[in-house]
Amino acid sequence: GAGVSQSPSNKVTEKGKDVELRCDPISGHTALYWYRQSLGQGLEFLIYFQGNSAPDKSGLPSDRFSAERTGGSVSTLTIQRTQQEDSAVYLCATSKDRDLQNEQFFGPGTRLTVL
Amino acid sequence: AQTVTQSQPEMSVQEAETVTLSCTYDTSENNYYLFWYKQPPSRQMILVIRQEAYKQQNATENRFSVNFQKAAKSFSLKISDSQLGDTAMYFCAFTPSGGYQKVTFGTGTKLQVIP
Image (tube, rainbow over all chains, first blue to last red; front, side, top):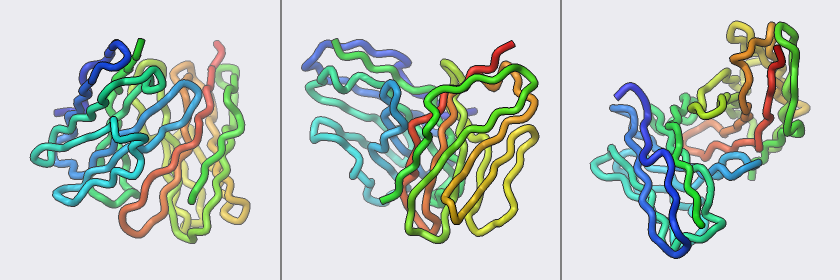
C-alpha cells in the first residue's frame, strides 16, 4: 500500500474486555514498531519486529500486552483485560530495515478508550 | 539510558515569523542520529529533518533547519516563514547508531501558528 494503515481508527471498550489492534505496514518494510502515545506524553516504545528475528518486547508494560507479526507483514497488538490506564493512541511505524537512521513511517494510530 | 527533553510544552508564532523549538538529550554515545517529527492534528506523524551526530554541518530542509550543538547536547529546530500548515505537535527523537537501538522520543511541543 501507499502508507502504513491501522485499524480500527477508534475503539471504545469496557474495562476487562480484550482488544486487538491491527497494523498493515508498507510493502517491503521489514522493521515494525508499536508505540503508545498518552495525552501530554511522548511516544512510549512497546515492541519491535525485524524480519524473522525474535521481537524486542522490552517495552510492553505488562503481560496483558502481546503482539505478533504474521509472515513478516501484518501485525496485531492485543491487550487483554483492558484497564482504564490503557486508554491512549497506539501508533504503528515501519521502516525499510533495522538501521534506525532510516526514517520511520507512521500509521494514523488507533485511539483506544477504556470505559 | 538515553533521555530526550523538550522543555516547551506549547508555543505560538505569528504567520511568516520564525520560531525555534528546543530539544536537549542525554547520552554517553558518540555516534547517533537525531530527528524532528511533526504530527499535525488528526494526521500521521512525518519526519521533518534528520541530523547525523558525526556531521558538523547543521541539516536544513527548505524552511526547516536545526542548530545542533553536540557538546551541549542540544538539537533545536528553527522554522522560518511559519505557515498555518506548520501547526502541529513536534517531537524530537534520538537513536544511537550501530545496529538496532530503540528510538527515544521527547514529550513534544505543541506549535500553533497564528494567522
